[in-house]
Length: 204
Image (cartoon, rainbow, N blue to C red; front, side, top):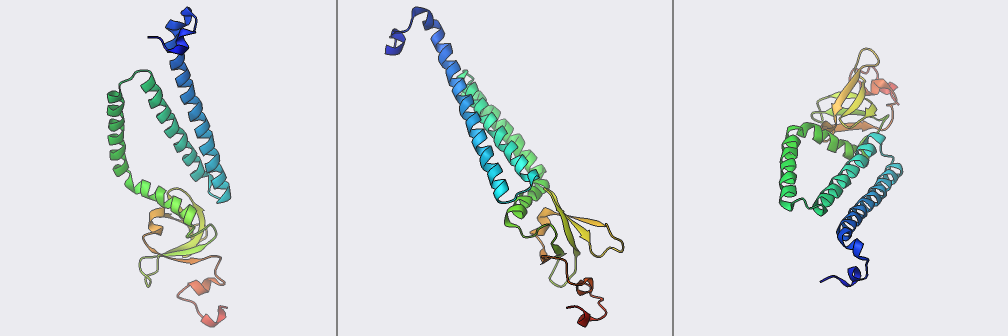
């Protein structure tokens, strides 16, 4: 029995009505996905500017949101086109299994990425700070000025090097696994950081 809407449509539209409605549903999914992607992108970019987040953190976050929305919209469109839900679920679980294996295989890298997010948001250290990574409170470790922070490493200019320009790359995860001694600016005198200081009274 035809619906009240289709009963008032011309006869030639009856055989095309199903295709037109399907096309309309697909277009609606695409439009909603585009609006959602642009809205979330604007939110992430605004948050990045407000909290002064680095571009190499904001960029991947925007890309992750975009591809997540594209994948979700694609699954919805395939469902409207008649692809079996069982097939979609099988494909999803297969990709999830592969992703889980890759996740555990790359855990050390991913832990550094996660710690980079914590460094950029919690700000335990910043560019220009002078830090020392200690195994224990008594045992000295890597020490220097923070010259770069990226998704994998914190780069220090080695304060113990005999010549300038020597860099140390500290994995981000190590920042949260070791004791960190931090100076927010350059120490008043380098001898103050050196155990072999000749005259402690000379340091203000």
